Length: 208
Ligand SMILES: Cc1cc2nc3c(=O)[nH]c(=O)nc-3n(C[C@H](O)[C@H](O)[C@H](O)COP(=O)(O)O)c2cc1C
Image 1: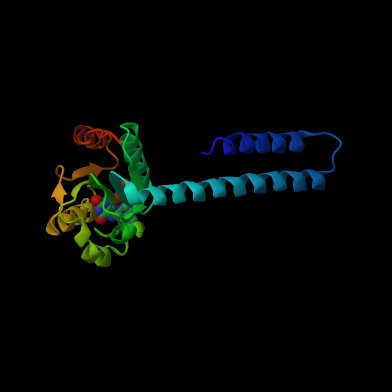
Image 2: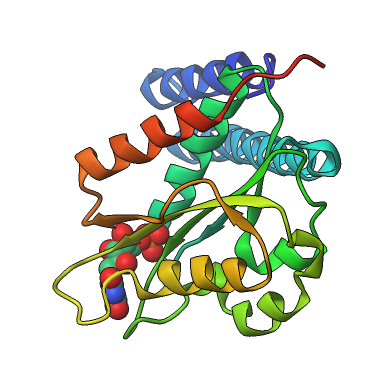
């Protein structure tokens, strides 16, 4: 979060509490003042989110690692963000995109990392709904290294089917696997830990 956004939002929250509990002010005035402060805080947070997303897209042009996520309810996005953070902690540039945007993204200098959930009956989730078309336009990613973290649930007959499909499609276009797809049942911490340990082994810091 931008350094000034957090304190301003905190002050606004404090203001709301003060207004609500203040004596001698008419209830309708309290309501208007509190609503204005909440509204302003929400506008600031939205502005911050947009700016952060834009920064992420801008750096996509020059990233070492491109992290693409396919999610229905947000879990894959969270793991993708953690993956970006791990890479950035090692001093390298990582960009975050939806898997639907892969065909128009800049090929990364080091590797493409995909975090993909499966939904329906082995289907692509919301942010990868266009995968059939996208996967046909990835010629630029031939000879790019990649790894896949596939999220799913073993109670479904087609366990991690979409993540496996993405890994197979990438291999077919000539991309090079860093390691076998890591399959995760119900967010199993041991499998997620394994993903990060595999990444830590292949992510070697570069000097810029
Ligand atoms: C309606 C529904 C359908 C699902 N279908 C599958 C499936 O076919 N195969 C599988 O391995 N997991 C399936 N799952 C499990 C999800 O992949 C798993 O919960 C995943 O962590 C969700 O990640 P997301 O929040 O990124 O969407 C399904 C989950 C739901 C709610």
